[in-house]
Length: 450
Image 1: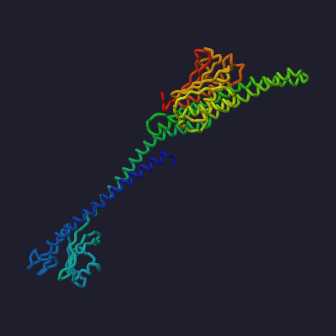
Image 2: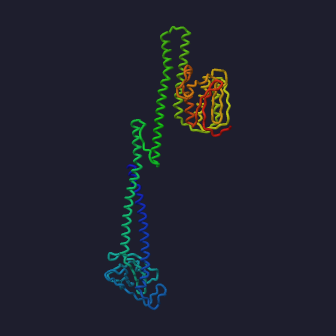
């Protein structure tokens, strides 16, 4: 069963049950009220048909001195009240003409007693009667009232309640169908769009984004998801294309050098050593490039959750590793800035900044790392960055003309940019006034000490 039919059926059932419950309560309340009024009328009718002479109206209940009973007639059958007198043997001594009410054991149990009157409903001559039976010295007197009109009223009330429940259920079904049609039409379009994506692989499909309800929000979320997947797919394709382009250079060099070794097995040792050095350089460059490409892909799909990190501690960990690896002097000046980041990504970005400075600074001067108010700046004393390349240093695989002969993949600073952007931060690159470059990133800071 479709969602549309489920919503329609649910609203119809709820409406029918609600209306039916109200109708049943109304019917019970009306029936109880009518029977109460009928019982009160029977009490009043008792004085109409009984004449207690000698004791007066103020005598105690059950006092029937000089009792006299009047039997009502039923001209044309329209008299509502009936009276019946039963002797101790169970015979009917007197009764309203044309009405035969059966004598039950409960009625006979009243004989000779002075207990409370018995209220009952009996069926006689295709009509129902409400009876009030009580004992007298001469037998049991039963005063009754015809319930035909009352039964007709209750039957009409039942019919109206059933009809009303049916009409309300039908209206609720129509309204539910219209609501379900409005809601599920967008869901159906969204389902078709999802099936289209799954079948064709195309991400440029239209999804319903109208409305402020859950269906509208789902459509907008679906569209945003498709847009994010499209961007990710484009980035992945661009990464593959760029990586393939960059991999050709070291692979071509490796193939050329190996071919030279095969063709000239008797070359002198100096030439052989030079070729082996080139092969080693190309292998290292190829390995670094593969590692950087893998790092880019891994960082994009990391499941690490952000947590508060003190920048000075993260920088010190990375700097200590760089000092042990290169034996270079790296000076750190840091405040107590705390940022909300993914620690592993942050340390990778810091490591790339320091490796970039170490690569371009061939002097023996120290590398300076400054941490202040969420900003990490790494300064070197190398040749600096050409003005034409300042705006492109964070582009993937970008390397300036002067840097193309140096080792590196061109991915290091692009990873720094991606890490900063994913945490709501920015990156910067500029030349120092007295030579060298200043490259770094800025992250939203939680605790900034000036």
